[in-house]
Amino acid sequence: MVDSRRTLPIVSSDERDPVSRLADGDSAGVIEDLERQLAADPADERAWLRLGAVYLAIGHLPEAESALAKSVGLDGDDVEARLLLADVCSRLRKLDAAAYQLIQARRRAPEDPRPHRQLGVVFLEKGLFEKADNSLAEAWMLAPTDAKIPFLRGLVADARSDPATALTHYRRAVELDPESIDARCTLADSMAAMGELAEAARQLEAAQQRDRTSTRIAQNLEILRHALRQLEAHRLIGNGEAAFERSTLVMRAQLKRAGHVDDGAVRYVRYRAALVEAWLAYDGDCIDRILAILPDPAAASATSGDAFEVTVVARSGTAERADFGTGAMLTFLREALGCPMTRASELYGRMLREPSPLVWSGLRLEWHEVELGGATLIGLQVSRVPIQS
Image (tube, rainbow, N blue to C red; front, side, top):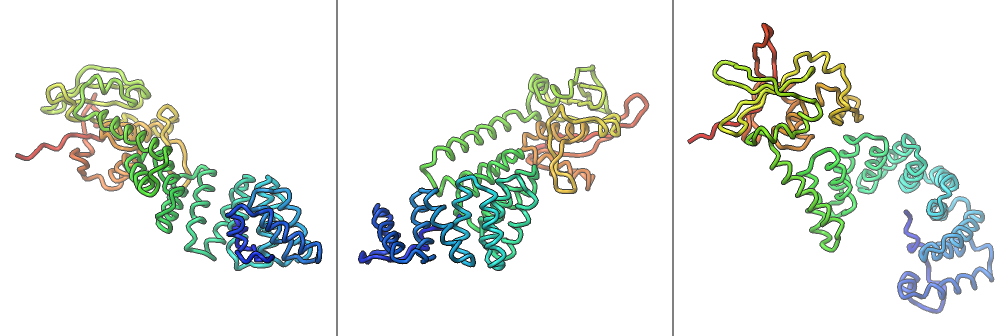
């Protein structure tokens, strides 16, 4: 948006600047002075610009559009007038007219980031996401410290269903303007949607420090904290078999109890379905370890994972639904560890790249071989790390 108040001059015997006069409610006086000036010189394009800016400042959009159109008609090279007229047209939902004014402004001032940025907003509102991002990228090249630009690019990426790119832009916006509450709240919303509840809560806590009067921030923060408490309480390791049977993995994969399986000195309770199995070992009544197995990884990869409703970021950077095998393993890790889905995805990726065991939050993740029916199966096991005395 353009700050219309910056264009207001002193035009009468009242020596206060027009911004102060408007703040004091003297919009009528400012308008009267400008209309008197225009009656004496109707071809004064700057006076029309100022009148339009006043009308815009007080929200009289049709009058602002009329005055600014006259200013542009008298001096088509005035970039400020075109920017203000585009702002008014956007607010009136005349998006094609706004785009035209901004393209003309950009043509006359190619090094000014404002026409590029504002045109990106108009393209976003029109649903032209590629054009929107291209315009904002040009604005970013001209104004790399403007935090509004990566914020807007994040909105475009969200509209294009590209959450990974959106997160990158929102993070950059917060880095450039740590005081921006909108940027922090939007970043928190995006993180929460990706399952990164702890980091989302941290962003809302930072936003709340800057605005302690916002009930929306307080309510969303409490929702996140409750979700985090619930996630930790439902961590399957250390819980009982009843908790496991209520888990998303069991429900979505339709796992059924299928007796016991011995693996050396360890006896597992076996749950199985056609494409995934889960074996549980106990310490007393509490689950001590869980082994997740894909008996036929190729078949699991070729099967739709819609049952798990897990979204992953592809190599192209776009978001897509995970296949059955990936959805099952990520759901297993999220529930076994009691962690956000993004953390489960990160840990699963590390295990695929580097198959050596790793320890996270007191739990050990490792690939584990078992023999079943004459075949060797490899599963991902999560177990408690023994407490050293």
